[in-house]
Image (cartoon, rainbow, N blue to C red; front, side, top):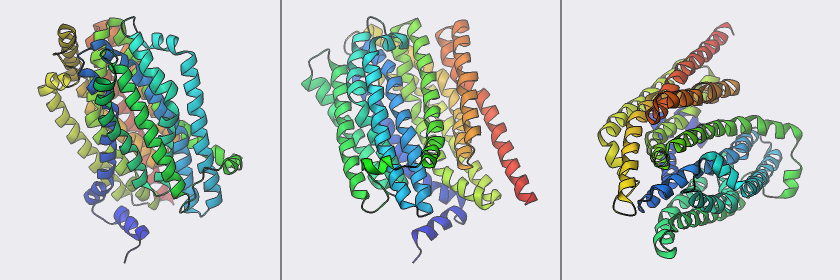
Length: 468
């Protein structure tokens, strides 16, 4: 019987590329889709109210919620990847210390974030574009989900990363999926049964926070159970014993990972600020579109995550022909999905937008106007999908090859030098349509730079291998 190690090596090195990519990508695509549903469910049920101002408020707070992901990546991905490397060289005591430090580091930074948001919530919401019509809704949601709920949210995601890297991907997926499923169940109960009419946003926030708490409790339990079989620890004494070298290694991976998410979040903040400067309805419409367009993106990110270990294995082993075949297969599959999504959104932009905002409740006129904006923005922004795939694809390839500096360079150029400046320029020139057009324009320019970086990196490695 083949061992797991030999089976995995055979999958990465010898199995047909399409089979290997399918085997690795399908679980990650499923995980991405579940996470997407989890993040979309609040918007979907709030849309049943037909209240565009409630939708705008939740769009504002999305950027604050995304910071939870960035903070969890700092310790979850940084610590998790180091735990996996230490396990590979049988440094189990060091791995325990890293896992404990990561666990308490995630809890600590979540508490600091909650405190800062609680102290400065009003000015932050005003900066993000909250108006007198959306402030109360946004404040209620942020208070419950961020100020009260950041700790279980950040800690559950960080624990899931640590579990996954220690070999317990099933437990990690179970915990995160549990949160998403509970949110789907609890949202309508709290919004339309428990809370009075007009308090639907508060109901959605309570449901989300409770779902995160329950998922966090399960993941902590799973973490404790797994610690008897793997080098994982929740002891403060282990956290205090982590070496300076291990801390440095943790942050060398965790900080770039957090920055990548943070830059994406910064771009979304800019979108919200510019959209709200036009009207709350434009902001609500952009919020709808930014959720809908994530559907093909989630599938493509899943493909890229499945591709990463195969590329990494063959990059380090020197099998560059197989590496490039994997890269090309993943890219072509993602591009096919992206072009199909363009066709779908061009044909069904209005019906898709209507799924997120009812025209039969509250103020039908404002709901119809919001849907009209959303359909227009979706038809424009969906053209970004193929070039977004190229950018995701290159970023994951760079990470697979261990090119952290190049990954960060691409992220800075993509968001800070291209997308955000184009956002302000095109919005100033063409208004709301220009703001929507900034995404495909910025992603297209970034994709050209990304392909240059990827080709340069591959050629440099091939040259070094030939000279060796």
